[in-house]
Amino acid sequence: MILEQILLTFLFDLIVSQRTYCQLPDPIFNDGVKNSTWGDSDPSDWNYLNSDEWKTKVVTCGASFQSPINIITSTATKENTFPAINYILKSSTRNYFEAQRDYTKELEGEYDFITAFDLSNSQYKYYARQFHYHSPSEHQVDGKNFDLEVHFVHQAVEDGEQSCNDIRNKLTVFGLLFQYSNTASDYEVFKPWFDDTVNRVTSFDMNDFFQRMTDKTYYHYTGSLTTIPCSQTVNWYVFTSPLPISRTQLKQFKDFLDNDDYFPDKSNNRPVQNLNGRALYKGTASFNGVTSLPVIEASWSIIIQIAMLLIIYIIII
Image (cartoon, rainbow, N blue to C red; front, top):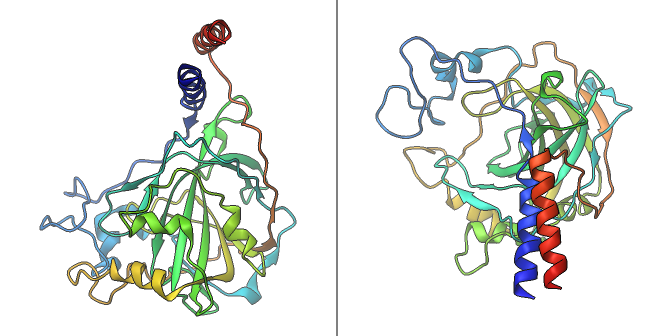
């Protein structure tokens, strides 16, 4: 039975490992700046003390279509298409692990897929890669910030259905807003970030967040990463109905920002950027969970390996 489980796990991981993610553009640094790191004494440093100066370090941070923005709800155009949020529960063997980031708490791994439309109305498939947080929220809604914003970052893939060359926005990011509530219960997925006694994240259902929304309205625009290198390759879907968060968990997020050198005002949010004529769309998302694995195009060598594993599996059972 143990050998059987090992073979099945290896088989699944072998298939998933063939996923080809669309690469992001390389950063364009200004003259004399070879890298951009966080928190040491190098002149290329970036932090939230000097967010207005990022554009002097990396060219793309001074470009026209930057994020976050102030979402002025009265200016949005109704969107007839919407992202298909069909999350597949991932294998418990492919865990999310905490990434070492000084400027946020971040969990990285491989998770579920979504299909999302870009502003050309083309639909593409993306897989979740990581999620991280900012406090207070980076996006504003009619000039208002919220207590917390969690970004779920999805990256486009190349497979038999789509080519990276055709995909302008290699990332689709869901921005979920959170506001303190004295009746909120804790989110299980946040606990490993702050409690060493809690198991690392192995599997969670992102629909848990969406199911708690009383209003599934989102605002969609094309923008950028909100940290250096500020690459303008992001489909943004910001859900503006804030989710409740407990006092305990909000304090845990806030306590992470206690380092006065990095966060003198106890925050890690980039200031809002000018919209600069970009279109802003409004829609209502639907969430339909599915349980089947995605179809992944395999090479002949992979097919042979899979066939051999299946023969071994048949023999041992």
